[in-house]
Length: 499
Image 1: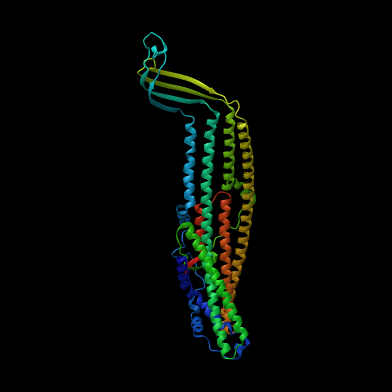
Image 2 (image 1 turned 45 degrees about the horizontal axis):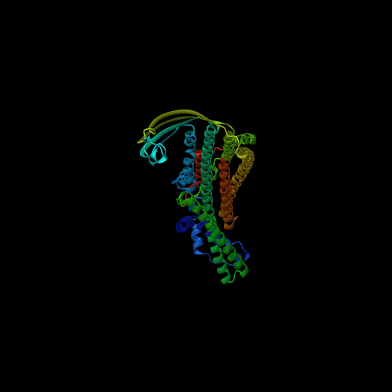
């Protein structure tokens, strides 16, 4: 895809300067700690010396959210609601299902019909042609005549259990369709949120891997230079080259992961969000919820799980349909009213009629169809009830899994935070020791690399924490815009503009 490739290239151009400093330092000192390097003075790479001078200019931390702000997660979700074709299809399906109610109500209202026609008839019988039958008398009716007629009839159902229960079935079908739409919206929100978090993590991971790649590139140059000067061996050079090749492979994989995450966001929302120009800030700004309460309280809330509600709606549809089928055992009573007018050349056929009648229809035998239909409906109702129990079990399992994930992530984040603080103290001590000649610069670079790796682990764990939190709210049917805003706020707190 052209756009993601362009975005990745721009990302690398923006992220490289800040990380190149540490990478260049790692290269400059990669061979300094070896015995061969201590034996003879190998001239340092000029880029490494420039990086060393720029070390003090690189700010290790920056607090506060990014100035421009990350792409809006709630905004992307709203855009996905407008863009997703499946969601649009379900909206039309809902509108179509809502027409079931007026259709069912129409069966309870008067049915008015009008009819009319024209008739020409040429008839030969004893009344129209008595001479032809041997009678000596005048004809009483014309043999050939024209006539026009029209009829207006009204039928009002007085009692029809099957039709009345059709209203209940229509309401159940509408409720199920509304839950279909709500489920699609929730699933789409979770998909966008997951792709958003994955894109954020992938963009940060790619920066780390590119830093490693650049550092190893300088290390390969340094090892080759030492080998060419006769103070290094081929094994060190091959090892450096192998690690560099592996770093290139890892970087390609990271690029693909970022490309996949951005492409997924583009597919879902129709937009290509910009995650460029950001870097990690002060991780201690992340506000975590450490107490998630009693598990039983969360399990009680699974009654509002959308999948559970949808299964219950399916059961209600099946039950109401069964009741409609049982209505086939009962009689129907209809009131029939009609008015007709016939104008004919035959005066005996000319008439104007008013009729009123009450009609009772009782089904006696339909070959066993009604009984079989009811049994079928009852079995489908029992099947849908089992579906409700299945969804309840799945919802409870999902809540337990997400709570375990959240509690585990909180403990891991707390441990990583302590490790980061310890690494910061170690880095300060290593820098002080290097200034006093008690430590070499390799220790400083190792401390910086360890600190950065721990920050990446912290962010990755935080991403799992955020996704588990959103999934937990969805499992209890409480996922809303405020949860998306909270996710955005937490990521903003640990993000700063890139240098």
